[in-house]
Image (cartoon, rainbow, N blue to C red):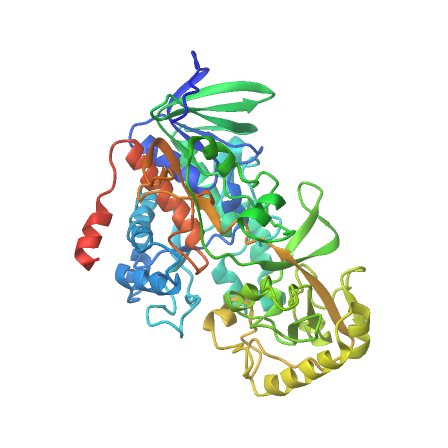
Length: 565
């Protein structure tokens, strides 16, 4: 192992978390609970990480909240669900490790930091109706609103999201008809929560863990960039960081955890590690692959699973915190009634209401022509959408922003303005309309996944919540761009079941741990399921700190024996 230990240290502690999302904070909290001094390093000026940008869902199979509602579920069922859908790209042991430990970690943080979570009612697994081990509700959890004033001086230093309606819970939104029916939401309740700074969704989840760290006097060092891991030839013993232009060498007697998210804002890494071209992103600029740059000199192993490309769009005049265009996810938009997505050939190419089916096709390469036949692509809507549904942050009935796509009175004119094949577009819309009138999609099965209705459908629209004909002019076409999965990428650092980084001989690297989106997704393989990223960050942060403190979990071995694996 590398030997670059200094002759003297500027700061000494027991455990260092690099990154202040749920992975880094859960580890620091656990380390503190187990008697270790803990420190969190955060390159940005705010804490909360990508966790604060998420919808805040936490996926935990067989959890006690579901049991209290008499919802039948188990560790075994959750394991089988992920195992089958991982398609062999994941690791059975990693899948079981995550499923078995997530509910233990959940109880731990509810007991220790006052984390308050509840079942998101009527929220099914992605593959409910297609897998015997999927459930209609119970595994997806969310936090109760968090009173951010209790963060004191850290209230303004804890991230909120410019994209998420964090003044509302999932329950608030979806009992009112979901994202398609934003006009029906209780904006009085939202205004009251925002006035009182009561945070829901990802900002609320992050805030609970920030508060847990503050209550334990865990030092949170913001504006501090971890530049290099320090080892003594046998184990990782510290970090060289830079703050205010000055090098700081920090000793970690028990361990260092890398939880800096992924590399979504690094276009070179996107192309070479994920084979994705020119991604737009909803995350902040510091999510640029520091996990690889930090662990690479020590020989940490990189692993990859199948990736997907998401789709998004920007609205002229809307900017993020770094002055760049603010990205909107297309996911809640393209599955709404009276909406389709077509390629330049004027053809639909997937189930717009179920991104797991749809987004795999974006980067498909036609070997006969060496082209991406489905990119570029466009969301095509009619005026019924403009009257009833939001399009990103463009509300129903509001003025359509200048420069957002094109519009025309006929589909043929719309095709001419975009470069789409006009004959094919008219044929595609005619076929789609005839089927949508009957509430079916024989081409791609749109409407056959209950999760689609929950996520983006209009439950008040008949005969199908995600299908409606495009018949009312003017028509609109918005070019959709490749967008990252909110820092959920294909490649990460491979770890053992305690979160210890592995070298290329599959040996744990003493003193070095990895959690969150910095870690290879061996628990999911080819599948993605909302809530897993937050759950695995929380779980592996907890496991890593336990191992570093000399109290490793033995649950996996017992589960392997119990299940006969």
